Length: 200
Image (cartoon, rainbow, N blue to C red; front, side, top):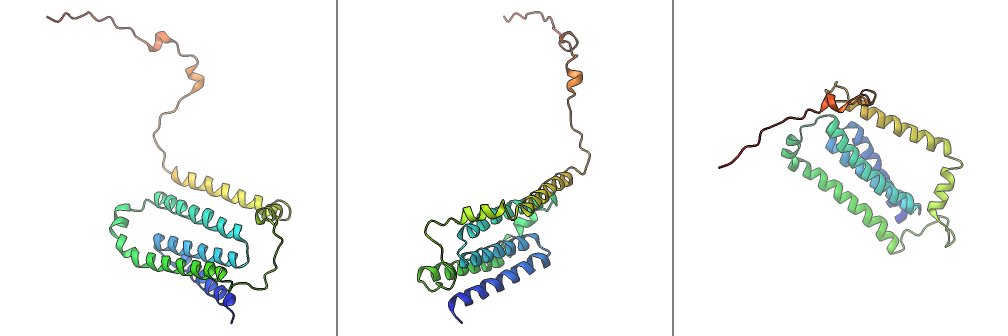
């Protein structure tokens, strides 16, 4: 088995395992850590296919977005943050294992490219080829309908998250512009005449 095939199967096995743990774990912190590991593994596979832009976008956009999403989940579900802080050390072993796996994946992929071990039968492109331009052209020509559908799904998610946070009727003061335009100063302002006091 050549090195590229070994790295691919290694990353794929971790990706499948992490994805399964995301949907089977009951602890949201552990699920988020496994989701980060799954995204890192998928980006390593993208790098093997020489799609560097997609790999970096997966890490920067999705890993960052997942952490923000996790914070929103913590806020929406009213998870007791004091209890989470108390159990910080219990999350440390899993966090260390995930971090070590991520470092190992980066070492395999980047080290293999540095030493030329991963040179395989992936078709090479000319020097002026741009991954970003190719992805953009495909997104807005062949895959424009799935792209628009994804944006609608994200919009529905935003509306649903907002609706979940506003479940209870909150007593908040509101303004009515139609009533405000008829307000007169004499109805709202009262001038008081106060005698001056002399200090001895």
